[in-house]
Length: 141
Image (cartoon, rainbow, N blue to C red; front, side):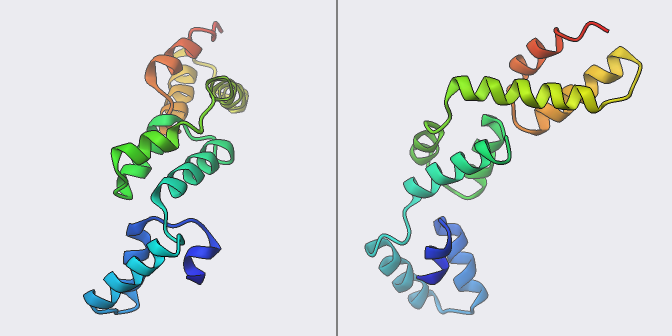
């Protein structure tokens, strides 16, 4: 319970922790059932918290957040539910901020190499390619 109270956890993280503690399968099932009943483990709440944190603090894009949630074996419903935490206006503002920050940090003189570095950075962060390439059109020299 303390492990789940410290921060939101998904089922997979709790399962891995119990395996690391060398719990037998029956004990793991009992513990997870208890955590669910006591509301220490809630995947909808985890998805919303995860999306909020990664978007606002780490400035990740939708694609990267979805990929990370899928890696944690969350259902499509919970992923979609969590993604409602992203405001479109805030999303485009984050993209603009990251774009300007990365563009200003690149010292490369070659225009195409500059664009590639900016695009790679934004795509790695999980922003959609169509949005990234629209932003790249703003670079003229």
